Image (cartoon, rainbow, N blue to C red; front, side):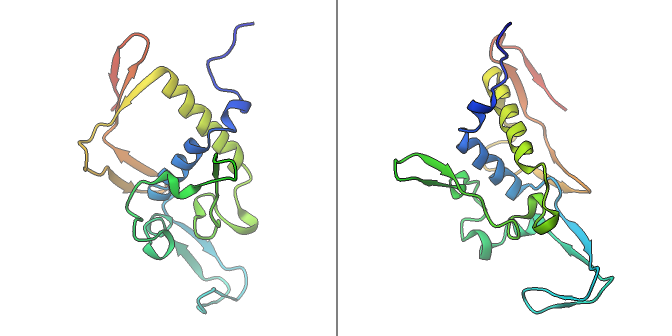
Length: 173
């Protein structure tokens, strides 16, 4: 049987920098930029706001990922290291955030059950792409992508992807 080019679980579980880069990407560009919930009973938010039963409450994940009060004065920087710390042996380890301040996968009892599986799949995908292709940004350095917030996020322009083996390129678009 031929060995697959796709990384296996034992490889993926050690990809802590990739995990951190994925979290940082979703902090700045969440796949679901805002969400709405309906209060099933009267409640009080942590800041003291009273929410009556039946009230619709929307939270803006995109804005939360840019709050200086949550992420510090370097909130605008793409910085995967904010998700990492060194252990006693000097190796990097991933440090997750409170799901209520980073609600990309929801929070509380309605948190996404597939979160860990999603990260494993994203890490496998990134590793598989990076093994075979060279991904070239479509924007000039210092130019931010144009973010469009719908039910799910869209971004553009698309990068160029070049096969590492053949050198062929394909501009996605």
